[in-house]
Length: 558
Image 1 (cartoon, rainbow, N blue to C red):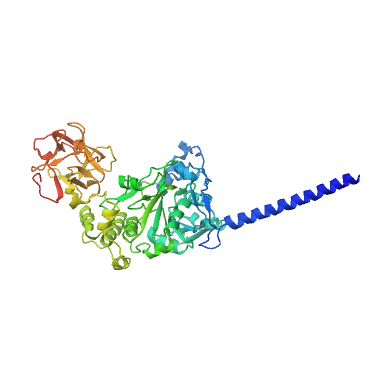
Image 2 (cartoon, rainbow, N blue to C red):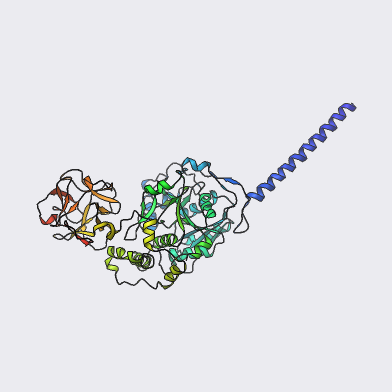
């Protein structure tokens, strides 16, 4: 009996010992988790040294597509009218839906420093649809490490929709990290972003549009690049969210460029940049950014002049900031392991008080006048209608350029964007290509690679009517060359290969555009404005005569 009592007593003591030990380790684990992974109470909060593994929360198979019936057509069209996307499908799509992980598989095993600065995500909106706005917010909250996300600032640029007032304020009160700021008047995207930055406290500013979805592991790669070099401004790869079905799909890895009309363009990564990178997930140096989605160190953003506050509403600010970053000592990168989806709309659903063309033109003129030096003449060559127009006072921006000791635009072209064709340096003729007999000009008609070259009434505005005859005898529109496979065929827009052949054209003394590979000439034929162009037997008829706006070097063929 005594032996049994002794065993019971020993068992009781062992049990108590194990229980106390387990409780001790449990409390210790809780303290460790709380101390090292809880969100920082300070804007610059850091975690201890070490390596963090990227979070994969939120990845998964996409949900089945939302199906609409005939009874939904009126509501669907009303949503399109308000927002230029299918609001009804968005409203019926869960705010926290799983989306496919579109990163390169190498990204999933990457590790990042544990000690990195926290971020303020700033989302500007004006009359945004409730569901797309909240889906943007929910994706950021759900897919960002808590210690790297200090706050989400929702800056309301004087919306008139009622649900974006009291209802949104109530929503924000229920989520500690979300803060709503209402502008007292319409500011426009540029000044609204400055207002959002002023209301934020994080060391890193992350700007997002209000119809996005942050993908898994999106924030860590952006923060790391800035953490390593505060003068680096970074952009995620922008994935596609279909404006009708809201299907999420990955985008190819490209980088930002522009044309002489100062329109942003996505461009393939050139060979010299591919050679510089060490692997498929290395950062991509980009001449320009799209402008809607980027991250920057708060102090550096202020040092280089943030935004040009004299620019209005929207347009041109992305190129202005891009030029300034590069010319004033910074670096602009696209980060392959950071992916954010974006709803691309075919039109702007909001209004511009002075009209979209006037606003964009004024902003672009400010970019050209401050940053492009003698090369601004090529911008005005694409927009001769703007010569002499008012672009406001640029004194402060010129003083900023001097104070920061920024490099000239020539340096930018030679070192950052050498692929851009410079009209008077490597072309023989440039501008619109006019057929005097008809007052029609060659025009891409907004078509894409592989499509047929068209004609349209000459408007003198450049854009789709800006062509060049290069020293390689290419008839070129930006990165596309005019290509004809066989005699009598229509002319197509194809990527320039630099090998001559089907892409070689000669401008004769008689002003014909002769295609040696086929032995025929460019001919308008009977085509009217909006029609297509082809080649035909050369006979000197008026429909085969073409004149460029500018000739840069007299030549035996010019």
